[in-house]
Length: 226
Image (tube, rainbow, N blue to C red; front, side):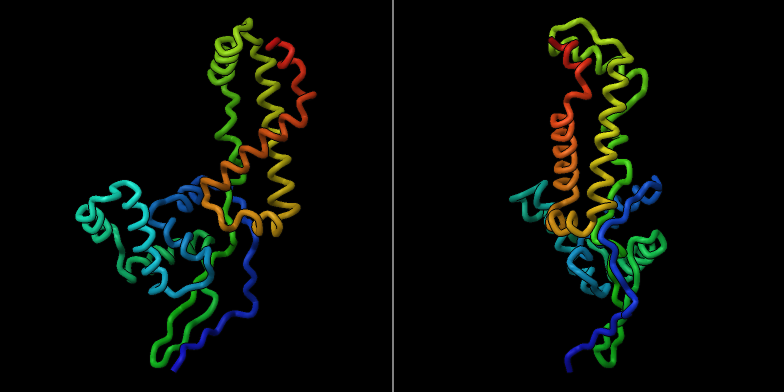
């Protein structure tokens, strides 16, 4: 007899959830949880289905490192793979953190298994730009000295660099608001097949393009480089 899935009719998956809590950011990038979240990007699944995907994910990552050494690959995959009991505990950790939710059950008589899904199609750092742009005194001084070195011009004043960094943050914030809050469905449709690394790279490139488009805001700095 074919199995039957019973899904909670009230479940609605969000397009994007922005994460600002550092502890939750650590969870969503933790190597032991990442394969589960990647598996559930494809849709809701049982723990047994997640277990199969988990092993495939581990093998794929190991092969990137060792490529042709099949013996080492198999040994590491065996060591790093997890049982469905262990994965169930990991899933429960993700449920508590708000990244995963039980949305129903799979009836395959005489067995009944829980079905799990991501609470959102994408989880993104609410302030990803904070790690790209530092406004500390040391960073400002370092950036000014690098500009001096690269462009062979007098070292720009710290206040000028600080103003530039502030404008960059504004640019990133504008991009974040436009994509994540105003057009989340369209954004997800475009990037949902990309890896997290590819998504972050695209966001950085768009933000740089925004800086170029609005270069008039940085006229003081540009003049200093002449």
